[in-house]
Structures are given as C-alpha cells and as structure tokens.
Amino acid sequence: MLDRRRLMLGAAALTAAGAAGPVLATPSPRDAALAEALERSGAPALAGAVIGREGLIWSGAAGVRIAGGEDAVTDQDLWHLGSNTKAMTAMLYGRLVEDGLARWGATLPELFPDLEVDAAWAETTLEDLMAHRAGLLDAAVLDMPTRVAGLSDPRPVDEQRTDLARRALAAPPTGEPGVFAYGNLNYVLAGAAIERLTGTTWEDAMRARLFQPLGITSAGFGPPVGDQPRGHMNLGGPVPVEPDQPGSDNPPFMGPAGTAHMTLADYGRFLALFLTDGGGFVTRETLARLTTPPEGADYALGWAVAANSPLTGGPMLAHEGSNTMWHVTTVVAPARGLAAVAASNDHGRGGGATQGLAARLIRPEG
Image 1: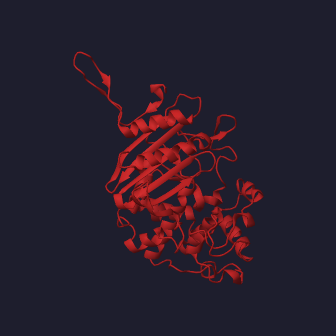
Image 2: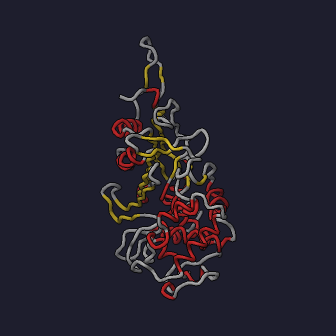
Image 3: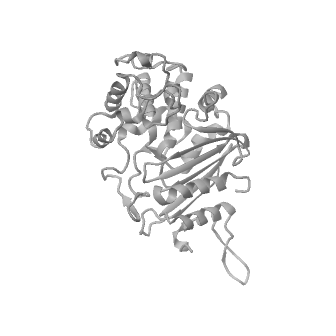
C-alpha cells in the first residue's frame, strides 16, 4: 500500500467520531481511483481533474515530485501538457479569425508571403496543417539533428520557426496531401503563421490572446521550474530530469506542437470552452470548426473525435501528450458537459495509468 504521507488527496479529511476520536474520512470514488492508479503504475506521481460547465468539479494529486524524494505533489502543481498544446494553438487561430486578423481557408502562400513556397502547396490551408492532412511529414525537416541543434540554438525562437517553414515549404510535400499523417511540424508551421499574423512570437500571442482572457495564470513553456514536479526518464527506473538539463524538453521551436505547462485547474479553464459552446471566448461556429473532422476522418484541429463513444456515452474529444518524460491524457464529453484529465511526471510508468484514470474519471459513476 502507499504510504499515506505520499498522498495529497483533496477529499481526505479528519472528522470527529464521538468517543472513538478522529478518523480518516472515506475517500471519494475519484480519490480512490487516483490512489489505486498510482499504486498500480509505480510512477512517482499522478494527478487528475474533472471539469464541468461551471468549472472545476474535482482535482487531486498523489505521489512525489521527484522519484525517491519526500516532497509530495499537490493539486496546485504544474504539469507538462505535451501535445495537448496543439488544441490551444488551434483555438488561438480561431480567436484570431474572430478578431479579423486571420481567415479560415487561408493558404500557405498567403500566410507566408515572405517565403518561397513550392507550387505544390498552393491550395494547402492552415486547417490542412492543423488536421495533419497537408502531406507535411516530420521526417522531411524535423529530424534528430535539427531537434538536437534546436536545444541550444541562440537565435530568437520565431526565427527558428521561420527557418523550418522555409525548409519545409521550399519543396513539394513528402507525404500524400489529404491523408492523415500525425506530425509536430504541422503545428510548428501553424505557430510560424500565427507569428506573422500577430507580429509577435507564438508564446507572447498565447499569453496575451488565450491565457490572459481565460484567466490562466500558471501557464508557461518548457518543463516546470522551481519547487515543482520533475519529469522522469525511464532508465531501468524513473530518473528525474532537472529543467536546466539538455533534453529536459523538446526544443523551444516546437512550442506550438507541445511545450505548454500549467496547473490542471487552469487547463480546466481551457477545456471548459468545449463544454459551453465556446464559453463566450469564441463563437459556437468557431468551436464547430475546431472540433469537426474532415468528412470520413476522426481528427479535427488538435483533437481526436468520436461521434459516439462507449466511454462517454456520446460524442467524445480526446488527446494525449508526452515529451517522453511527462504524460497527460484528456477526454471531453461535450454533450454531458464533462471533461477529465489525468497527468503523470513519468511517461514510461505513468502513461498507461493516465489513460486508465482519465477513462474512470469521465464515466458517469467516476
């Protein structure tokens, strides 16, 4: 069993019980699910949250920030979201459309007027990129030498993204346009397009146009620093990685594809948009654009989509994110007005655990 010292479960509380004295209150089913998932996984820590139309319903965290350490995680800690950032980049673009700075259907030559764009990209839109159907494959540009070089590249990050866009668009697609092929480079280029539309870096645009309006105050990019959990490599056991170590995250230029971190409560502010027809931040029509896949497909803009999932008893949005040291699984049931997220600071041991925990939390009895 887990040492109770390691558990930070929101519903645990001491109550008076007459002459018997104080006793530990029975954990809620969600608290119990979290504790059980952590014990089975062997990960340093797990955290979870359930969000409804009115906001956060439940959150909890269990385990330790660093494997072998004494510092317990809390439900106020920061978690690296990985590729769950993609839906945020897509939402930011939708907001830019509503602000009159962008438009749906804009082609890559329009969005990158400063670059030489091969004629084969003439009809490709930003939506094609964000749906991973542009024929843009990571292997063509985003190879390992490029990633490694990006970890120490001294140039401004927007210049790095421009360079990647230049290299990617100077030649025809290496994949088949119209066919789904998941890749991070799609969102790196989406971020580069946003930088042209806003005249600032993608990071600054996210802060000013997404995080601040939604009241997200804990967000940052890259691994959390300071008194926070550490991501863990799987080297025969969980090995913590300090945020200033080379390779503690993907290179910064990959931000639009997956480097955001924040508390799960703040992430819930974003997820609530998908439970409330855009929550007044974007219109219902924009939300439909973001969450409706092309005909015959099951991936929209930053979301895998199921029209009728047994897990949610209706429509479902889902995504996972990992930089191989963290793992976050998100499930949204829009018709039920419910979303669940589960996070771990250990991809190797916690990845599967977050999947199972998110599934338990989203169920009606979760």
